[in-house]
Image (cartoon, rainbow over all chains, first blue to last red; front, side, top):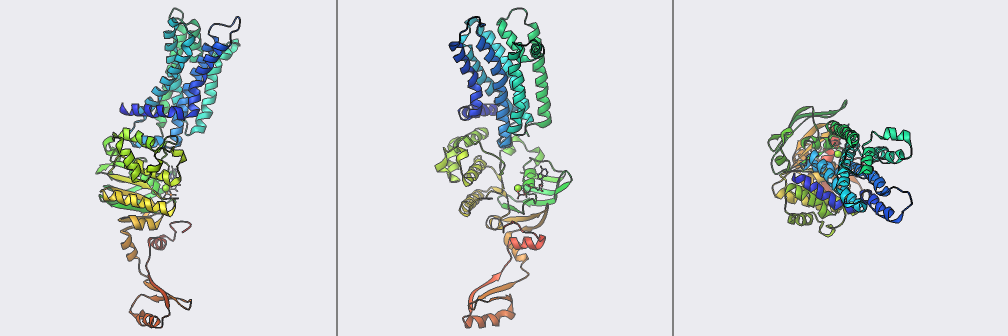
Length: 228
Length: 282
Ligand SMILES: Nc1ncnc2c1ncn2[C@@H]1O[C@H](COP(=O)(O)OP(=O)(O)OP(=O)(O)O)[C@@H](O)[C@H]1O
Ligand SMILES: [Mg+2]
């Protein structure tokens, strides 16, 4: 438990210093603030940019951050030093995961400023769940990749599918039929409904299946590779 | 403190260690001397539980290395070249992480950095440190939690002579506090200056071990006396009675510039035993 907090503390200290990851965390929240205030077109759906950027944020930031942080520590062999100091691999992963989730939730908090008060809880809950799935997936990549280069080349396509799939689905029926099975697409559906009411069943089931698949993948990767 | 009995290790079909034996008593500096590729780093990894081995046994602190607990690990400090530091963090920030992990008061951080001579670079990000300073930071990280056993993999390789000397001083100071130190090197002067005991490792086999002086004495079978004469001539005489009159004659004639007996050093012993040099450029 203590080691998890130490890892979180270390990451918090690194937040300002690690520009690559920092940009991932703040880009979409800032873009949301700017676009929502700057662009108001007739006939544009309400909170168009908030919803669009929320999904892109979910598909990019946690994934990139997790994979980048883990693969950098592997490449520089600082992770090995932590392990030799008796930090358990799961403690390290939990620490980084909690850190990334918390920062992303803060980002979501910024993006939620345009929302009505009554929708905030729903929005943050849905985002929080989506971040968890993205973090697990980013963790998989971090565990799998030996170094930062491999990690980046794995993150890119996954990130593109998760973030741009739902956006392209707006314009193209065929893509929508496939994108439907992505948790990011279903979270986008939920954000459009923005209510706890009836009719969320299908989305919730698909999101749960996504979560189950990625968590299984995570444990498989972890058992095969550990953090070596 | 560190016992290694008949350890074998191979990668794929390549045997890297074949039957390594030694027993290091508490409080000594043990040097593993060998050329590049001899298996030094591999052995350190095995001794510290980072690598599995095929046969033999390794005991650290009286415990099989496989069974070391978290508490035991806190009594061990390891420095390897490949062990990185947090590049964006300053020296102090780097040590803070490990002080927290080991539950050591932060006051000890400054003390440790002073001990390794980094007091003026405490707030510098690690990425701006010179090679020597980075080595010092790595040493500070090893010393921070006052381990009982320290493993150092080529602690001075690639450093200038002055930095090397000051690191030797730090290592000897540590020994004074009763720490057991295992170090690898391919520098025979370093081994002679630091180690109570050395083992010469070649292609995974320890070809000789003992106190550096004893090893040299043991291989002192050439026993020659070398003279350099004022005439510019070099002369080699047998180290024995039969040379006494000749030497005395030369002295009386004032013909001797320099005179010394040629004793083997670890380098020549290694060469004699293996036909190989310790250092490519030596
Ligand atoms: N993971 C590995 N897989 C395959 N072979 C390896 C591995 N690690 C080391 N070796 C081989 O084992 C031999 C010994 O390597 P080791 O790193 O222990 O040498 P060393 O004595 O530390 O050399 P140096 O002085 O250059 O550091 C080398 O031939 C190396 O190629
Ligand atoms: Mg080595």
